[in-house]
Length: 311
Length: 311
Image (tube, rainbow over all chains, first blue to last red; front, side):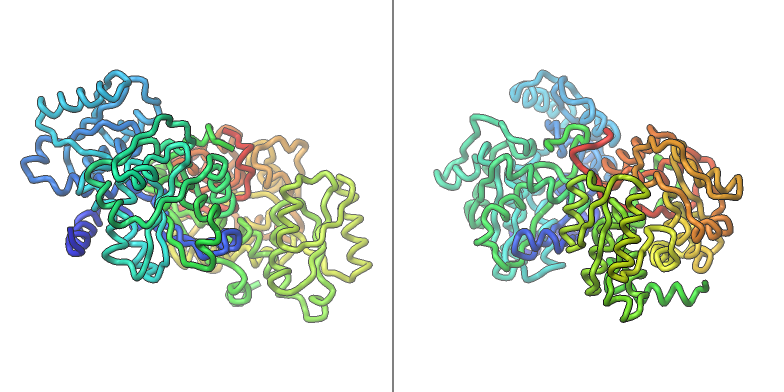
């Protein structure tokens, strides 16, 4: 890993992604007591930063590998990201989904011409089915968060943010599977100017916080959080990066997440997912730490069922 | 009225408003069958285009008039716009509101230091109270839609849109009290390049449609629409402009408004008011008319109670 590799990654995926805007709000700054720059990946293609990692992973394949397509097992944003990136690059995408996955998510994948393969709703069934597809089709398996190319692709969001605002004191990102925070940490390491990286996580699924304390990958015993994108755990590719480059992880309560989400909706007039509100909730929770600083926040995505809101 | 006056208006209010972004969406273009440029006044200061007219009206007062303050009776966006514009310009604002107005709206005015004077919840009481304040304080009365300076201020949204996209075939705006569509029509007349102006209105409150047919200002017998900003009727200052420069008015059903609003929320990840979705609903309703054209839409505002959505 080096700086040049990240620059190449950004060049590679540029034609397939949006350079998302960086928004600010005087009202939110007044509430937070600091200056916040929101990198709006909710405006990214298919509505989340996942497009960056998926595009990079597919573009990094050889011509021969591309001919055999790609496969992933995901029922969330990564499934849509792989489908759309594969479609744009001209590669076949197999998406393994539990048969009881919400219709909206299945339709999202179909919109982008991903081929859905249904399986039982267990982690084992998903892995088994993805494995089977891989063997039958020779498709390349793509992991939503624990794969180098995906992590490097994700890093480009923070790279763009630092191009816009080179003198940020801190960048915060939510921590789910670890792919976004690891990418963000790499970007800050290579392109930041005395800039810290802080992860934000719900208390309910604080596996990353505990992993940094124990030095090994911890899992969650419950997944009882409104931040449905953050229920997963770290992997062996991203954990070492997080250990090395992430300064700390702030945990927040469920009501803090909902309140931060509502504030961003009402004041900024933009739609963000609950997972996406976690870093701003962390800033509001620890105001003293951030007082008068220049803060960057990766708003990770905006795919939310607007008829089922937590407020 | 002339071109120069609109240019001066824009110069005058510039320091007090945001130049709002113009957003596009490939997905919505595919659905609509045309190219749509959304002028995002939901991102305007206080969340609506009303800031433009309010700022211009206050800035157009003489020094002596400014010392006596301004008064309006409104329980909606204009109350907040007058409060904020007055605060920024350093003028006292008296806002007459019905005593049963929602707390959220009262708080909105208080946030911007407007002084609320409560009255009974009838049109007569509101006018009587505003009149009384005017006499007692010599404050200047500002009308939300039927005042030249307010109309000229509103025109600057379409002016900016045409600066960005000079070759639009049509610009659409919602029609409530008539102040936005009249301003938009003036801007298009002076700065458009063979560009039409179309108003959009719910069938439930189609007073403007009927007014254009009968040649006199019609009122609504019911106000049963989700587009709560469009329940008012035209005035003697804006109606002649609308008669002269607006090509037609398209009426839409309630379910079309809700569905257009949901599409914009879900696909563009931005928050708009129901009233604001009416022009896009009109485009979807009459696809043939707009086929393959370049369309501008004024997204008028984003002040909505996110815990009370119509979907």
